[in-house]
Length: 447
Image (cartoon, rainbow, N blue to C red; front, side):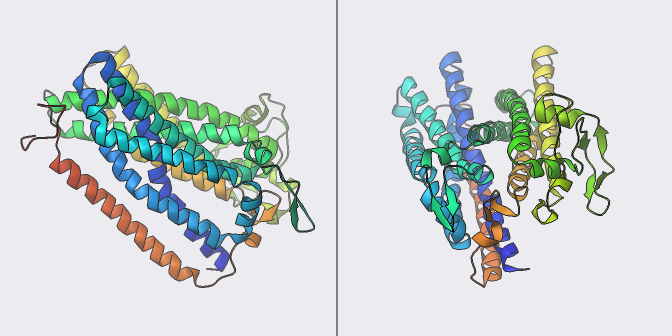
């Protein structure tokens, strides 16, 4: 494995691990806020208990997300010095503002965790709202650097020097709003389905007539409704993202769809795999004209194919599979949300069938898997550029050696951190079972 691939693998592994905690760290505060609002509206103390317990989980996730995020920041400087030189001169603004967003999140998270019982109802809601705003702003600001990589703006490179720097133009680069919207709604979706997943699993283990079953059923319905709503919004944002790729990164869209020939009435290919020898997608389902419509809202829109670009600038062709996996999971989650809502609210059924419960239990891991596929697709589909058509990834990478050992060490650290996180969750919630006899206090020894 060469040094460039090692550098990419090391940073990619770090981000693949960190994104779990970062995504849930944005999605869970929304669910806590909704639970608080429902409690204040209905006076049903189950919702207050949900908010309290989910906050404990949020605190654990934040405790792991902070060090992994710090590792990612350090690795940016160590592994990609060429890229960070541009960042330092052009788009350091999001990093600087993100510090204040994180402080806002951490401050009010501490207030809510340790003083929620002493706050007025209004201040409880304000505290959680500010946690949500801080977490969302932090995610948007960090992701904006990725948006800048795909649609760089606000500077020029002239004779190897960075000139005409406009940090605000770099900040509000052409894909800022599309990317910010996508990271926000997909994180909210994932947080909701994570709640639904845990609730469904608990319901499978509880007696249907029990008090705990009713508690988890409320959490499940909340997760399915919120998750289904944001999965639909994620799909709508995905349509806008396809149009942005068509306009700003046409070879990335062509690789995602396995399109080699530039053409109007371009078909959308679902499934299959891209064969570089025959330059076609094998075993895929082709829907005529649909890609042109998605790209330009018209069936005769001309979509540029890969053959119009030098082959050394093609993204890896396996991104077609990643893209299909991401879209497939998103469509399935829309269906999951609709099934849950229709079965309970429209058909008025008291219980879900067992097959549906297992599907709900799988929704959280599936949502997180979709996030992972989407992140890998977004970064890999931009290759071989670290800053699109401005700086090659190879030119930005460190020239240091010994990355193989670091890759092994950090992978081991993430395995240990992941295992420790699971153990802490299991230990805490086993020692603090549902106090349904006293929802306002800590669990007694009798669950």
